[in-house]
Every structure is written in C-alpha cells, then in structure tokens.
Length: 237
Image (tube, rainbow, N blue to C red; front, side):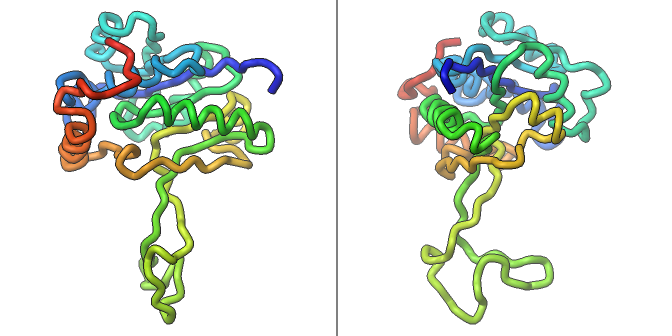
C-alpha cells in the first residue's frame, strides 16, 4: 500500500460476565482488567484510534477518567444479550469511526503486548491484498481425536513424537484485523484469504473462567512483577 492506512482498534466488553462476575473491570495486577490491553493498544503507533464498545456504565465512567483519548461506543440494547454474535456487535462499532482496517481484541487478553500487535499489523499490511484479513492462532502439536475416536491430525498406527507431528492451529481470540467491506460482505471478521498470525501460548492466554483469571495473574506476576512495574510498552492510564 502506498500510503499509511488508518487503522482503528475495537475492544468490545459487556457489563455482565456469566462465568467470572465483573470480569472486564475486575482488578488484575492492581488495575481493572481492561486497562492492560487498552494500554498496549494506545502504545502502538500504527493504531490511529482505540474504541471501547460496551454496555457497562462502570467501564464507560472509568474509561472516561483514565483513558480520555479513547472513543466510547455505547452498545445499543438490541446487541447486549450474551448470545449476540460478535460480528453483529462489530458491524455496529465500525460505523462509528471510518478506517481502512479494523483491529479487534478483548479485555480478556491482558498478556498481549504492543510489539506483538505491531508485528501483526505490519504482516497484514505487507501481505494485503493477497491476504485480506488476519487472526491470531496458537500452535498445537498434540494428538487430536474427534468424538468418534478417529484421529484428526495423525496416523494412529504410526506413533510419532508429538513434536514431530504437523502443527494445527487454534483460533485464540487475541487479534483480528479486517476491513469493513469484509465484515459487511461475509458477516465475519475472517475473510476469504486470511493470514494466520501465530502468538506464543502464554502471551495468548485468554480469560474465560475463574481458573484462567488466576493463571493469567500468575503468568503476569512472573513476567512483569505483581504490579506490572516491569512491563514495557504500556501507555500510562
């Protein structure tokens, strides 16, 4: 691409979390959970604007105080149910700020780093339009079976070491980069020719339940200290 494209990051978060109450704004290493990923996005020079899409008055009030440079999108009532597809939420959010590309991540990825975000953006921009979108994946090299006990990624008659198995990749929900056209035409963040972007398993840790939350805190404390004082590339909030 000849000119630097405008890229807007979107962080959707609901007020109510079914498995971890108040998850998105619950204290994590001394700060509300969502502060961590928002800080990393704000520190990325390739991102023109960060938007928080939420129905949470708690998040909106806290974000206005700590991140005045972040745009707040109040999620409309018809998109607030827990079973609402994320693509529907994003279709609303992208109308709030025009951009060449949109990046979506979650507050539940507190270990995701600015350097990784920048690398993902750079890879897609360099490969576009051969690749029309990007999503984060985690490499798996383990023996997988389906519900009928049929091997998925290996020959059960040949016992290869797991490290010798051809890798498969798990969509880890850390990063999606897409255009509005892809989202509207396919009703999907993932285009027809997506680029798989591999993220280290620990950095890609996603908080889905209470055990995930506690494990993520342990990983964070080990890498950056209990209060995150050793973390680099974090925008102050």
